[in-house]
Length: 450
Image (cartoon, rainbow, N blue to C red; front, side):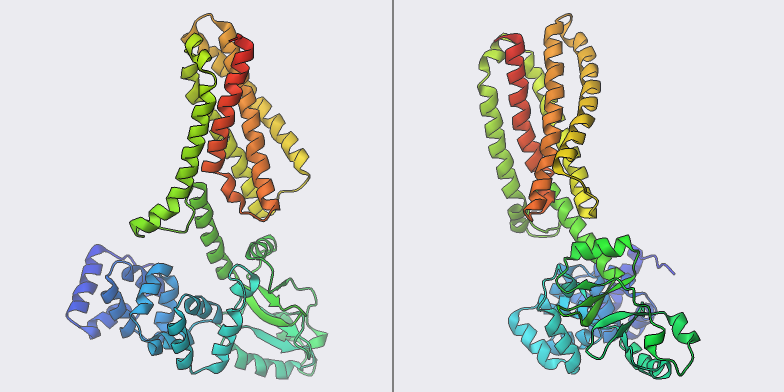
């Protein structure tokens, strides 16, 4: 049931904290979903949020901490002792625990490990920390249910009960051999209906999708989306089952990547939000603004080379914003489609076929837009059809070139393992501004004869 968090409710929580009325405070929070409590903490001061975290039991606060914004969570953890952090870690799945511990300082990290009572849990966290965070190894959790192909159905049921105590949700049952290598998966229906004296080898399904620890997170997301998987097993270099990735982990990854790409498209080079310091926001925004400024200098220089055109055909000046805007818009449209296709893994065929298709598409778009411009120019320029025709031809040319740049650049960036999201936003807009002006004035020069 969804809980509506009102301003009045937040004020009541603040009052109860101030009065140290723990009994009534717990009566409000005990039955609430951890996501709702995380939303409440977002409205409280750091000290107030810390008070609630220390008041609730670790089983619940472990879930709450994973719902809180990463920066806010780091600040909260700084207010806890290593023992209190360790208590939270004990209640988390290994993938979530690894995310928490990885962000701690070296000194605090060591103290937290010393306070972990479950040494197997600690060992699993250490193992996961070896992997890149954007790989399957970095996303996976160690908690899963696996059975040996040589076990009997009866023995398998007993072993599964013991393993299930550490698994929050049972998405799949995996089958391994004596060396721990992944052999397949086990249907719960087949397990229940199989004779009690049968072996797992007789009932398991050999066909199973899996990834290895070094598979990129993007590829994991693509596979899980393509085959509509709730979870996928992860194997090591020699095929041993070492973990699993669940759909909620992939959703978190996709959301984080979308946030990064959105900021990159907007010309923000670091992961920041509105609550960060002025220095952090400046550092994230300034590099691309400097690039845009230099691009503007180049555009001014290009326009300056055609000063005589401005003198003899001053009306060309009024078409400059239109040409520049269309170049930028077309370039961003083309690059956005390519970047989206790359992200989905649906970009197929040769680059030349892709460029040819883009040319065909934008010749059609250019003709339609140029006809509209030609007709509109009649009301601005009167019967000076040569100039109107010149501007229209320039517009078609600019649209085609801008689309080629917007298509070619992200493909090449992806080929050289650079995030193609760089190809949208300020980069494409600035480069197309420059080329747009150059093409516009060059065509005008030869058609109008200045």
